[in-house]
Amino acid sequence: NGLLVIFSCNTCPWVIKWEDRYVELAKKYQSKGVGMIALNSNETTFGSVDSMDKMKAHAKDKGYNFYYAMDSGAKLAREFGATRTPHVYLFNAEDQLVYRGAIDDNAKKPNKVKKPYVADAIDAILAGNTIKYASTKALGCGIKFKD
Image (tube, rainbow, N blue to C red; front, side, top):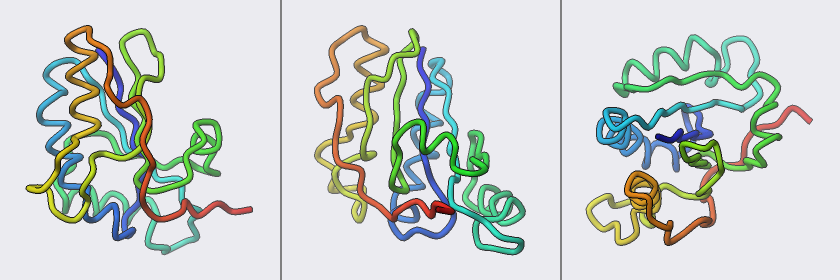
C-alpha cells in the first residue's frame, strides 16, 4: 500500500529527536501494508559513527522495527535528491512519490506536533484521499557526501 523511505544516520541531533517516531510509524502502518526503510547515506570510514557495525548496534538499541541499510556512496540519496537527515520520501501503492520532507512540524516536542505530515500523508493514501502537504522542508543535518 506504500513505502516510506527515510534518509537517516546514527548521530544527527535532528534524527535523535525524531527517531522514536520512526518506530511509532512502523508500528502503526506496517500492519496496513506500508513498508518502511531507513537509509544511512553518510560517507563512512572504518570505525566511524556511521559504520555498519554502529548502525546495527544503534538499530537494536533504539528498537528499530523496520529495515536500516547503508546507502554506499550515497547513490540513492543522490537519485532521490535527499540532502538532510532525516529526509522522508513516501511512495503510494503505484510507486509514485506522494510526499517528501519532514516527519512532522515539531522535532523537539512530540506532544506539541500540530502537523504530523507523514502520518497524515499515509492516512490519506490508505483512504484514497488527496494528501494535504505533498512537500515540506526537510530539517536536519546535511548528508555527509564523499565529494
